[in-house]
Length: 496
Image 1 (cartoon, one colour):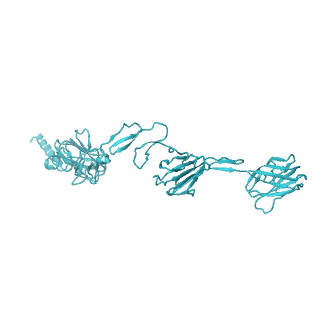
Image 2: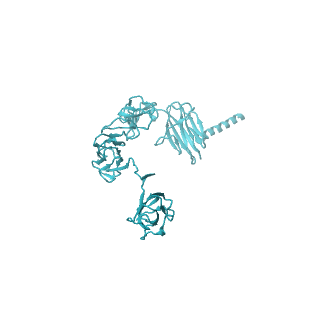
Image 3: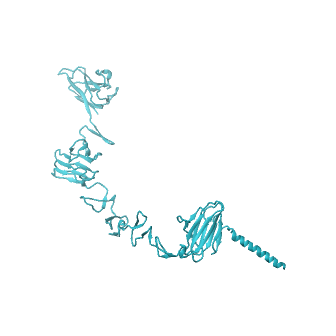
């Protein structure tokens, strides 16, 4: 036999042996891209390895198997394309023999995927892979008996494969032509138009910053935005127990109400809440105060002012049921020039009143001293002594007096019928049972009256010991030394 013929025969036998071995034990490529021949097989070991298969035109079902000669970890994603592999999206595949459809896996197993209208399918690594995942993709032609993508649709689908339509959700038909849908306890769609108010209409054209409110179950209207200065808020002003439309309200006290002339009775109204009632007639007024419950406002508050002009005309406030707890006097008497703010007590079934004078006028010698939160009334006191010889010349003598409140000596005024006299002052602190003596002197040279019959001095002579400061209940000694001709003398000390 010629040598060339022998060589050809040897090559043919080797080729056949290789083909038979490949058929008997296929070797997966590192990743794979297959034509329409089925199955398509490949190994995935790194990202983004993929096993990609071009699908025959009549493919209805795809079967995917992922195995591993050794353990592998990672995520493999199922992807499909309908444009020849230009773009890919997720494919939903059902685990076999049963399970919930997924778009990826981290485990070995078998999956079934619908493929109607697809041109390509691939399994691709999307996360770090360790080990080696062996992937097999098989395509099955669509047929009525395959349970694939032809035949009559059932369940929540209607029509026929490959183009069924959605007829329901979880066994219930989808409500048609409804503006509002809800769901029931079976996760089925239901008509919820009644809960959504049906068709909504609007009255008026809203402008910027307007707010809307319902006039019925299907109609909205608006309250126009205020355009004048102030702090405004939407509110409901009820004059009876009936609903009214909201309006714009300006923040502030309610409009004041005046009781004038000879009106002698009055009743506090629910509309007085947050306002001011001024009594400015010429007679006393008896005022009835209903309960906050009657006036339907548990936070009721009102300010009452007595500006009456009659002779000692008071405003007498008598609650119809409740009483006043602060002050604890019922009825409440508001005298001329007084104002009282009346509020609901914290207990909720009584009234409180906070009252004050509208104005104070200081009388002669009275000083009003203002401070944060209070007013101090300062009134001077006086003490002194009269020395009377009954027509005979006076001799040296001492008179004693107890000062009733603490004060500061401001001045002295002395009188004498004739001649002259010197007055000195002794101060013994409270607590002692003795009388003051010259050892307790608080004046210096003394006050000398020697010209005329009267003398006014400041407190400049009071410079010894406590000086001008006198403590409440101190005992004061007033000592006189006359010149031997005076028969009567008097001295008065003014102490603030």
